[in-house]
Length: 321
Image (cartoon, rainbow, N blue to C red; front, side, top):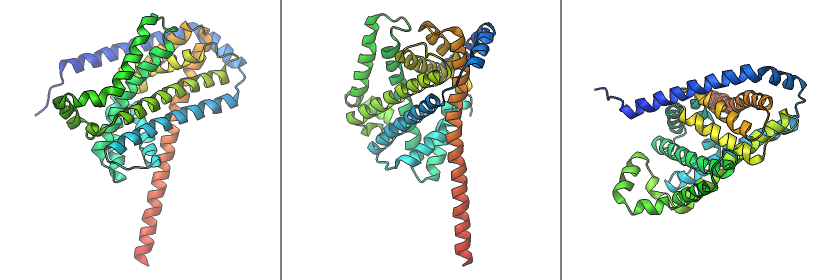
């Protein structure tokens, strides 16, 4: 029996598709308008490789903090896993973002690799999904806190990040007050009922550190490409958070293509950067972020295959002896 897709899911996908199309159209128009100036600026640019290396280090550190939070969450669920196996699963699962409905692909990769490493696949997939959802909430908090002035939010709206942060930290205690709700969530996310307030704090600060480090990495990239970054550090953090959140909303677009660039362009332009500088950064940042996703994952897969081949060869030699 085929289950019909609920109408709101169809509406969400159509809205995401429409948003993506609009963002792509806007981005094409921006490139046509500012492309010649950006090309001239690129030809005159002197790349500072020290800043590029700094940006890569900050981005990888952002990945590492996210894995630290995931490991802490799994510990509450009774799963003991070291950092590197989880890092390998996390890096490879990032490849799922480049497919439509990327989160489903990411969860499938997590479950598959967890099974290979003899870890409970259901718990790892569910915990990864939960941490991702919490990370989105923390990203919104970072956006409000860092980009309030840049995106023109009234000062009173800054109360929302504080309330959201308190709500996240108090979530375990609040859930205990509603046993039925807790039971429903526990069925969908195995092990969630054992999460402590200390673990929630660990998830919040590691996710926050990851968002901030990626924003710093984006500014480092701009410093390596442009004569002047042209915007404040908080503007770059807001631009990264806003663009990534837009990519998540645009679920039908691989890795948020179009939506991320459109939002980043809007935030950085509003922060005072010249259109030509923004366009250079947009084009390079897309390639830079893709390389930071694909290359580490490819290395993990190559080393995994090499290690598997060596194991099979050793086993054959042992049997022949």
